[in-house]
Length: 255
Image (cartoon, rainbow, N blue to C red; front, side, top):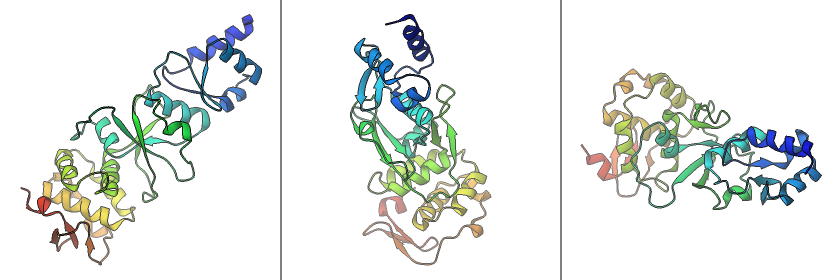
């Protein structure tokens, strides 16, 4: 390897988050030719995870670094959602067994590549996409990963409700709702006014009112469209006339 090749390699490695990836398209845009990349692979400095996707041998591929590099280098918008975003914000009811799971949201126009579906990372990824939020509420995970965002807690809980009861039980989600004492009423209001899933909005309001959170009293519920049709969220449940939804009996009777 020439001195110039070595210098370019050092520059590349110094700027990179440990456990992340390198993408050929981005590398070529930044002056790394196919010949140079082949030299790095032949020398053992880089290895291929998939076509056009490389990593540093010996690195443990870390979910946050992988998503950061994917978003940064290729301009993607993958982010952390649902209960994974709630865990990052300090709210947790689930005790994971085995390899932890990270719920990843992505725009529908950005399909999930096959390499991201492999078991190569420190988390198991589950993917989720929705267009019910016309004004998504996202926040940066931390300063080490400026291109990786997570759903704000207010949106993350709505995403959990969207995935229930298949992904989460309503009772487990209510236990989390009881912890959500610090939700911001203005953010909740914005989301509920601009979210078109009536079932999710009704269950959110029902749970929030049942939990007795102070921020619920600050909501302008008359501005939140809830529709008029009845919705059965579960079979053999209890009907809540105020919100026109049928909820699990266990939740209805819980005090």
